[in-house]
Structures are given as structure tokens and as C-alpha cells.
Length: 248
Image (cartoon, rainbow, N blue to C red):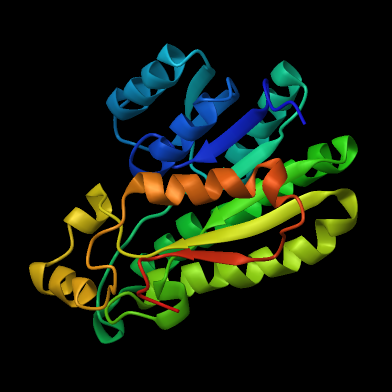
């Protein structure tokens, strides 16, 4: 299949793993829609410029992906202007870490809304267009802690475990329409989010990685891009772990 001109939506795409994924798709001259919720436009503007310098189309949109109305409006606009959506990468995510005994309801709800409800919102918005064209690739970004858990991250772990179950269920629903749905579960990846972790948490993670190093955003992006390629058209409902052996 000639992938030039694919329309790709990436949530949380302005920096970190999302940016690395966007740059992977830029190599095929795709039309890339970056969704973000940064307080300012500096990161998304930089990402868009990087993509455009590679000869691909790019645009940035600031929306709250936990809002059904905001998501529906954006996806409708993308379809009206580009005529299709070929790939959806659900990557938006936040952390609000605390022990469960001290966790506020607000922090529980916020993490589940941004990390999990956004996947529901965006996936539901893209299914009818993909079903109509009888082609599509959806990749949801989960996490190793959705598989093994992590103290002080019960909200984050629950949201990422939810993504795994969501992925498998939608994969079963959409397989007959030639739409693949998979998840990638990164381990300890060097990003702004992991940089903010306490030093003792970082040391604990590092001691659990057989390969003895942090992962890079490019490590994750390569797996995501492969799942959206022709080489992976017979793969659906899978969780691909990119973690240096942290979970086997």
C-alpha cells in the first residue's frame, strides 16, 4: 500500500513520545494532526516545524481530549478538510502520583479522564470514518505499570491497564472492517514525565531493567509506526511491551 498522504492524528503529540511518533510518520510525507493541551504553543510549534522541514504536512490543535464535544468537533473538522483519517495514536497522558490513602478524588478523576476517557472519545470519533474506508490503524499508548502496577501510581496504573482491555475489545469489534487496534506499553523511557520522578523511584526502575538502560522515545515510536505499517496488517488486539526486559 502506498502510504504517502495518510492522515494521522496523534494526541499528546507536541513533545516526548508523541513528538517522536510524529517524526516517524513525517518520513512517509503523511498529513499529521498534533493534538495537545500545553499551557503555551511553543512545543507544538516546534514539532510542527520539524515535521514540515521533513516535507510532511502538519498542524497543531489545542483541545481537551477528555471532552467528547471538543474531540468530536476536531475529528469532524479533520474529515471535512482531509476527507479521511487513516491512523489514530492515543498518546495523551498525565500523572498525579500519590499513595491511595492520600489520593484525592480530583486527582483520580483527572488521570482517568485524560488517560482513559480520551481513548474512548477519540476512538469512538474515528471508527465510522475508518469503517467507511475499510481501513485504519489505531495504536493506544499504555504502560508497563498497567501490567505490573506501581506504588503511588494507582490512578495512572489503572488508566493504563484499562487501555489494554479497551484495546483488545475494540480489536475484536473492528477486525472484520480491516481496522487494527493495538497497544504499545513503554517501560522506563527518558521523557519530561520520567525526569520529574523522585530519584529513589528512578533507581528502583533502573534496577529492574535487564538491558541496563533507559528506553528512548524513538524506541517506542519505532514500535508504534511498525504497528501501522503493512508488515503488521495481521496483528491486532496485541500489547507490545517496549521496556528493555522490565516485564517479560
